[in-house]
Amino acid sequence: MARTRRAGRTLARDKAEEAKKEDAVELAGVQWEQAVSPTGPTGHVPAPAEGPSNERIMNGDTVTLRASFTPIDPADQAKVTIDAGSDREVEIQKGWQGTGQIDFKFKPLEPGNTTFTARLQAEGGDEQHKELSFTVMADITQAMIRLEQAESMMDGKANGLDAAALGAASQFKAGYEKFTAGLGTAKKADELTQDVLLGILFAAIPGGIGGAIGRALNDRGQPDWAVDAVKDLVKWSLRTAGGKLVAELGKGGSPPSSPAAGTKDPLDVLLSLGRAAKLASQQVKFQMAKNKSGLAAAQSMGEKAFEGNPMDAAAGVTVFDEMASGLNVSSTSVLKNLWRDWIVTNVRRRSITPVSNNEGPMPRFQIVDNLTAGQRSAIFKAAAECGEEGQAWIDSAPLEGEGSGAGAGGAPGQGGAPATAQGGAPSNAQGGAPPAAQGGAPPNGQGGAPPNGQGGAPPAAQPVSGGQGGAPAR
Image (cartoon, rainbow, N blue to C red; front, top):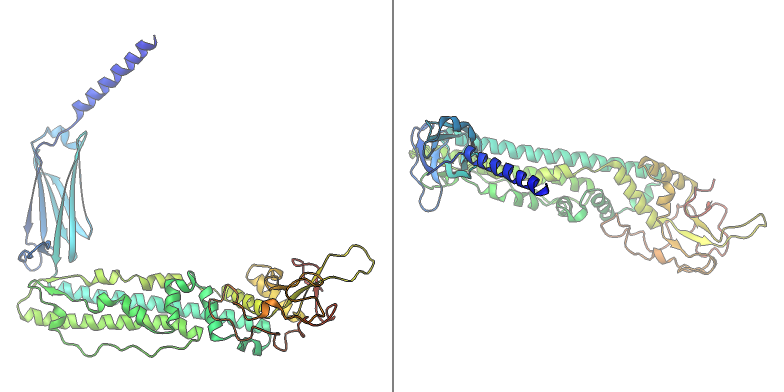
């Protein structure tokens, strides 16, 4: 019985395969041929390029690619899939010419190196395809339009980065002003050096100092990175059909010069991104103007076809767009990084063994710090605005010692220097040099002297928390 069922399935499969073969369509002896019709605005086809270059055609000319094969049954034409495409904007027509011929017509609508592809796929058969490559030339009107479009594109890229830098500067300023208002002492804000503030800025930008934005910011206003990004456009030129560089036929004044380097002020450094991009755009405009001037000279020499598309080169300048989209600096990230840096630099935390008061079990040790009530309140308020816990920010400050006699800072009363206040690296968020205020006791005005050398319980003015993660003492 089982053998009978297997035999039945095998027979059914064989019949299906036989039916599939009977339905298959064969395109036998496929041959491809091509022709170019001078339907472009100049009414002629430029001479073929010398060497391995693509064949030249005019923008608007029609390329006909014909596939010929052994005629098939008209009923089988529906079993043949016809497809065509190009890597540029083109008009495409395709269709049967009888039962043994399919024509593909390509009409390029923009200049530049272009590839056309035609495909045939008969049901049950292998794919047949043909690819053609051409250099599509432009007439003088089209060339002028493309030059102006390239200028406009670069203007848009530069203005986009300038607007993004302005927005980032506004966010940085807002975060800094909230920080100084919360701190309440201008003297302490002044101690944040420009190097430290630059570090805060780098920390607020995706990719930090190692990313494209960070590297450009680290140039402190030098426009070299932007000019380098458009170096191909700054020397770009159309070519005549005879190979002459159009820009060399034109006239031009002096190219825009680089501005003086900016300061190390974070706001100025941010805005320098837009200035550098605009300078690069102006240098591109200068080169495009030479091309425009050269077109008139080339036309007077009888040139009608021009090779090259500056839009290709302009579209290849992606760094301005990438940087503009990456400048998503927020005032809260700046506020957070400023406070975290200040806390690590200025807050002193020490663990002490509490004195028993016979009122029940006591913790093994308590954490004390040198924050004033006002500073503690400002930290909690800023942390809440950033969606975080203020105590967690405070706990990021180094802990000096653990109980009596423990830790590098020594027990209270020994006068040992705090191990973490010796000018070490700033917080991870800085990315720059440590501020000058590191390396000793916190400056005056920070809520009393640090607990070093106090020799016992902290003064009454210093709040005591009930453990590292608890709420501040009231």
